[in-house]
Image (spheres, rainbow, N blue to C red):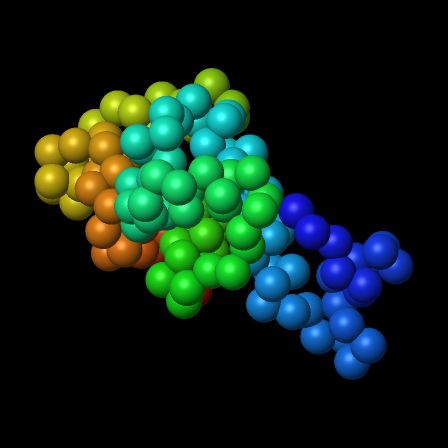
Amino acid sequence: MAASGSETSGTLADETGEVSREAMAEAGLLAFFAIAEEWQLNTREQRALLGNPGRSRFFDLKSGRRTHLSDDEMDRLAYLTGIYATLQILYSPENIHLWLTNPSEATSIWRGQSPLQYMLSGKMMALLDVYRYLNGLRGAA
C-alpha cells in the first residue's frame, strides 16, 4: 500500500492530528485480510463480507493497489473489526472458531445459521446484528 507523508513519520495522523480517511481505509483493509486469514475465509467469503466488490477491485484492495473505499465498505470494515475485537474479549481462540461456525442457541437471530454463515449473506444488517449481539454479551452500550 502506498505510504503517505504522514505515515512515513510513524503516525497515521496529519499535521492537525486527524487520521485521514485513506489511512483508516488502509488500516481497515490490513485488519480485514488478517482476520480473513485467521478465520480461514476463501475469496468468495471475503468478497461477501466486503459487500461483493468485483473480482478485479477485490484483488486490487487485497494487494494494496487501491485503498479508496465507499462509505459502505468503511462501515463493513468497522463492524468486522469490532466483531473480531469483541470475540477476542469474550472467547478463547478455540471457542471463537466454534462460536463463528456452529449455530448457537440463539439460532432464530441467525435464521438457523451459524453467525459466520449469517454474515456471509453479504447484507450489512447481518454484520450489524452480529456486532450488536456480541456487544450486548460483553455489556457494552
